[in-house]
Length: 476
Image (cartoon, rainbow, N blue to C red; front, side, top):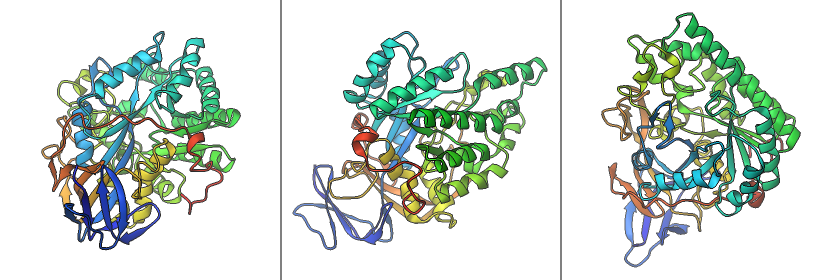
């Protein structure tokens, strides 16, 4: 592995913006400074470009079974597309089966990723039930497997949904272990009733996916999860926040001193509920949960990111082809596989809509797209920043190039793009994972299987960030 020097670029971290060279050797950032040299080093000219830390996507579903089918992108196509988009680390959700050992599910997810991933990855672990067997396994899952975040679904009744008792006991155990609890916050019981009512009345089109999952019940579930976190003292992370009600619940809980964090996604900033009403079943392309909201919620989400009421940005990558998968729900919106292809455009959309349009500073962008995720999920400072000793996961980003998002040019293994036709500013020109090019001059040069599984620290071990209540907006 030859040494490399990235020269003439503008380095951007969550804290600083400055011009310097970066010396990489053995996959690690060895030096940062001006006029660096090393015998035999490959020189990479980044003049006129930003050098960002590689993006950390905390929310992906690759090679995941759902609704009688499996996501179109596996760990090879999904991580390759992520790399094209400037992401160098993903944390995927490992689903579990009731009545079976957690370790069995983990082995299954390792088998899905091993030999396929082109960038580094880790797992969150789904908890669908709590009993003596599960509780006995959790300490080794955290300590030996390095999986320090548990996901509990408050929706998808009779499929993934756990009851409040399971969520509460998961929080108690996680608090003791120093692990994070993540929730999909929607009231699954109410949704089930509304879906059955809609279908009974003959309302089967994709738009009813949104109309049966109103924003008020996302807000209610978010507030309920925050209340349980307050009772238990657990650290809570609310995934894919879509609406004003959920932002309000998180903000009010943080004001009370609850250790709660919120994530939103590109689709909720860019698209709205009207897309589900497109004719000829086109609306099915935009079916995911929680659903797209009325446009008024977008300003609330942007403001929450800008002010630190929401702190992170995931893709919720969960791709299904329009033809052959989404059309399983023809005539019954409840059978449309939930999810969309987002992993490739997450990084660039946040830059284009955030930085280029003056909503976010460069440093806020890096924090939201990489650093905060690395800190919250026990990967910092190995990932999520540019510092001596950190992995050389770097994005050489050209802010002066524009591109139009299209399924014809994207690298995801799916037949549509929800952001089709949207013009964005800035492209990842080259992307390095642990010092080796995965993308070079917008061309894939990586190899399947070079991505490594990352064991993560608990938040008690890292102790690198305080509780939501104690951090100020400036510190965010």
